[in-house]
Image (cartoon, rainbow, N blue to C red; front, side):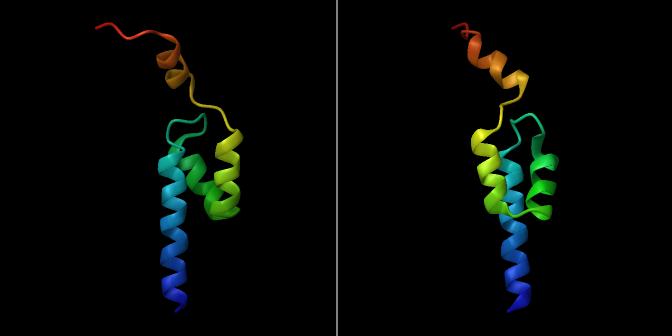
Length: 65
C-alpha cells in the first residue's frame, strides 16, 4: 500500500513537471516544487504562473505559411 501511494505521488509530480515545461521555471522547477509542496499546490501555481519568454514570443509572432 505505501509503495503504491509513493508511486502515484511521484507520477503526479512528473505530470506537474511535464505540464510546467513551457513556463518560466521549467520542468525541474515544477517537479521540485511538486515534491516539496504537493502536486495540487503546484497545479495552482501553474494556473497563475507565466509562460516562458520563448513561448510568449511564439504566440505574438504570426507564423509564416
